View 1 (cartoon, rainbow, N blue to C red):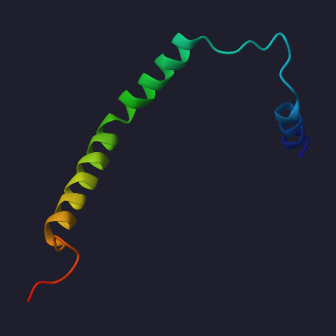
View 2 (cartoon, rainbow, N blue to C red):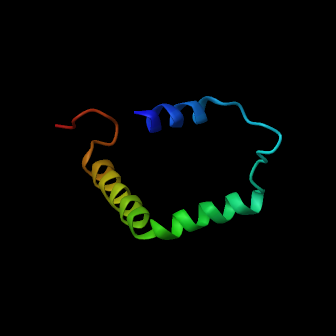
Length: 68
């Protein structure tokens, strides 16, 4: 229980002068490392959403009304 309360106290403390923000290069490298780790998932997700959207667009009527 003390670990949990200590963790909460650490989160709620404001940022001090010794806590410096990350350098932009570090954050960009972090972003690219995450993207490369999840590259296959992102590719399949975007591809599947594109295919589903294209199929829906091709199946739906052009002007919103059914032609008889």
